[in-house]
Image 1 (cartoon, rainbow, N blue to C red):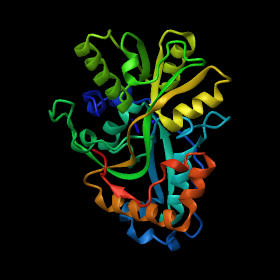
Image 2: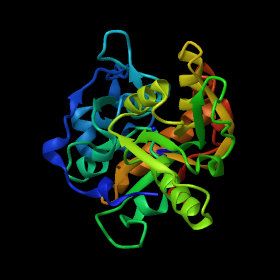
Image 3: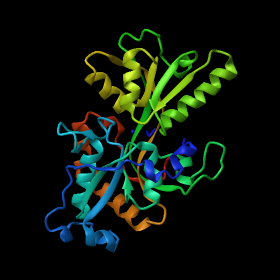
Length: 303
């Protein structure tokens, strides 16, 4: 949720439709927070509050999703956030929101950072749409993982879909505002140019809604990141399978406002620390996504 180019809708301010909910997370304020190794790198604001507010669409397992209580955020991102919090001496508090409202809410200060399986792309960095038109402020990313977009199909692959080209003439359902949408729309243009059949792209607020369309046979495929596609396949009771190989590997990034460079750099330092001490590797292994590990934290490495 690698979230996978940026449409203008991602950056259009939509405060009234944000529907943000507070979600509990595994991260809690560490004891003796001031003695945390990297506490001094944080801006004074966060040293005082001991809290970093995280915007996330908590419906993208195993990246982030809700525990059985329907409230607690669990998954790869919450586990990494807890580990980062130990280094920084703060609690990362996840708040649930629709994915394509996340960047606008970050810019208005509703959130301090975003962790939502969000792809670090050049358009998100610059705040430009696919045509290069400026549609909003960009963000900085602290990159922490890499993955590619996978094709999820019904079990048995009845449409015999193995690549993006096989989607021509089909219907694809996916989550709005993601790089999966950008990839699908680019493929739709290619299908049209090649005269190989119209690719219809249906978008939804949440990937779970797109999965329902796939289960019902109303779409031929859902596009999402490899960890998410693989998790959905294994948890579906045999309803889905992953087809072909992942397309366009790119990094996930923790998004931070461009004017919040001190927080950005503190998070990068914390990520480098947990990579070095092995906690990062343990978390990725726990969720069976170690193949996406980075050797070091990078800033704005996406393109």
